[in-house]
Length: 408
Ligand SMILES: CSCC[C@H](NC=O)C(=O)O
Ligand SMILES: [Zn+2]
Ligand SMILES: [Zn+2]
Image (cartoon, rainbow, N blue to C red; front, side, top):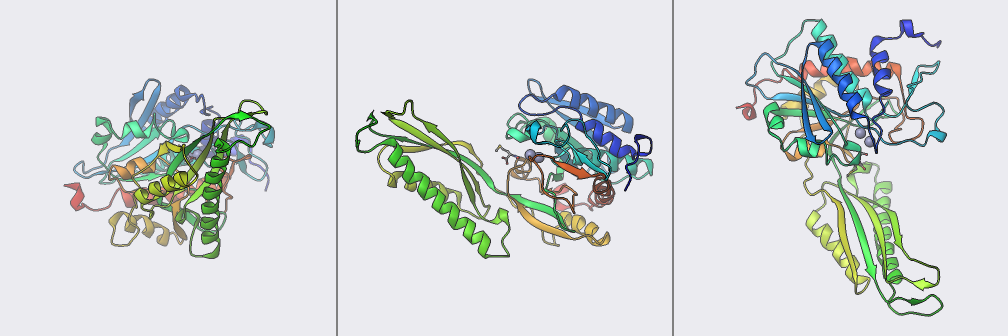
């Protein structure tokens, strides 16, 4: 297929590519430019735009399309504005140029995670407004900073504020993942992130001696135990075709620290682990297990949490739930396949669900390899445009869910 020149490119694709060029890349995202871009979109769409500074320099931008029945709770469409860093030398094209190849693939950091979704929300709303449609429920689009580093200066603070309460969110959409097959993935829960630092202390001394009770020996025991647990979970996932990645607990050894010189046995060493705990795990029992593993390694082995999520929640996916019924019916009507899963990593949905707002993670990308955080992150323009169609069906369905007991 020959590439369309910029003159006949779909305007939604052009807008997407403009947004991709804004360097909201961690660790120093240009949030000012993103907020200015969103304010301009609000102006173009005749939507109100509220800026909530949740921490100095960290703004949540809220664009609102009022519904016809303000008594009803609202639909919240969330996306984060930041993107993860790149290894530029591994990219085929500049990751912040939004290069489109002759087949229609758009390359860029954020093409999948999740600048596509931000623009799809905006363009679906634009289309529905142009068509003169209106719906009972208000639609809020929230654009939040700092998701990629945990949301601690983004959604985590925003949900605690009166401005969030004032949105009266009844249901939310947030990010999901691409799916390489014909199906679309949707995420109704996520694993709890636990970043654990195990510190081992022991006897120091000269590197030539058989010193008893060293920090390294004991740390090695803990590392072995945890990696054995990892293998057990890996096998459990591999041997059961019904289980998807998010249904088991994963762990990786991601940091090792300690030592000062080759001939000095260090008195302390530490190991860092990234646990993603499945939502059906008893978290109290799991923490006790961590204690037991450390204790079994010997005296002076302790652990601390660097991240610890303790409020896993599951959004209903049975047809008796009005939100799920409305969401899934759209896919039936459009003859599209949905696969419901637990998100394997962490998103801002956890903060929304913990506030009692049911949330689904959905990024409309089928026939697309999962390339978030990867080199050559890309999305085909046709898949991107199809996503706008899908939201243009989803938003009317969700914003027309009849009055619920929770609305009163
Ligand atoms: C807990 S902070 C990290 C959040 C991050 N989210 C997306 O990749 C993740 O590692 O899942
Ligand atoms: Zn993301
Ligand atoms: Zn991400």
